[in-house]
Amino acid sequence: MAEAIQVPPVEDTEAALAAVVALRRLANQLESAAVAHAIGAGWTWAEVGQALGISPQAAHKKLAPLLPEPSPRSRTRSRTRSRKEKQ
Image (tube, rainbow, N blue to C red; front, side, top):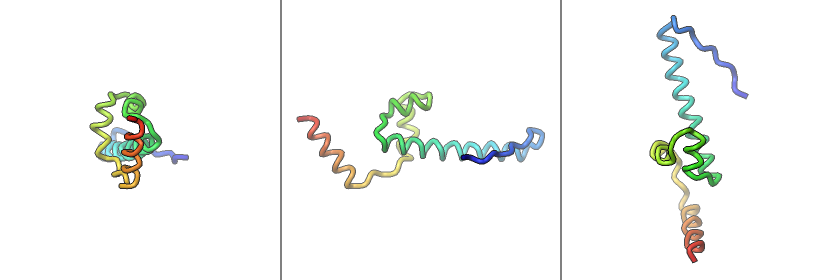
């Protein structure tokens, strides 16, 4: 379970803005990890986009470059499957 985080008061401007930056970084890390897991589990970009409240195209454009490269072995299996499906 995630630990509770104390958010500084807005009156402490420097600390509050630093917290905003830290939260954005954490949100981006969580988004990237969750999307990588979803794509690895077979989710489509349409499903990812819907879950994030954005279009499939926007999801792909923003997040595909952040995904780890598939291994050559998984790419080969993927291409082999595609050829079989076409027959």
